[in-house]
Image (cartoon, rainbow, N blue to C red; front, side):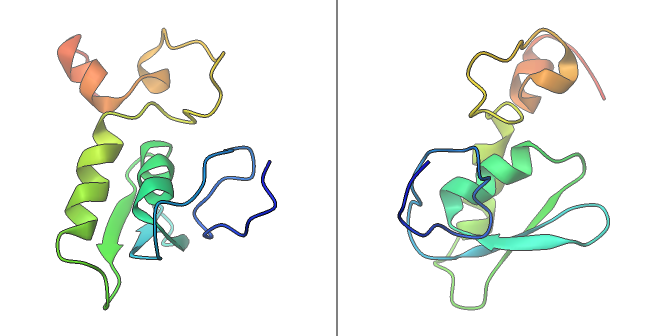
Length: 103
């Protein structure tokens, strides 16, 4: 845990620092969401099923697509380093595609 304030998209158990300013909003299937830096937004998006990402008005160009692409390679709840990664819902979307698993 860190004493440095982090963005709203940072999970309390994720020890990593923010990568920069708030740049995107991540929404779940119920339209609940959080603004975040690109790093934590990607980690949040990777942990959601059918999540979406939108750039904030003053975001750097391409922020939402960078988050979307980064989330593809991140397993859900990546900060749980000892978690099993044997089931499709425990692996990244990219890894599932490589294994031929479809959702």
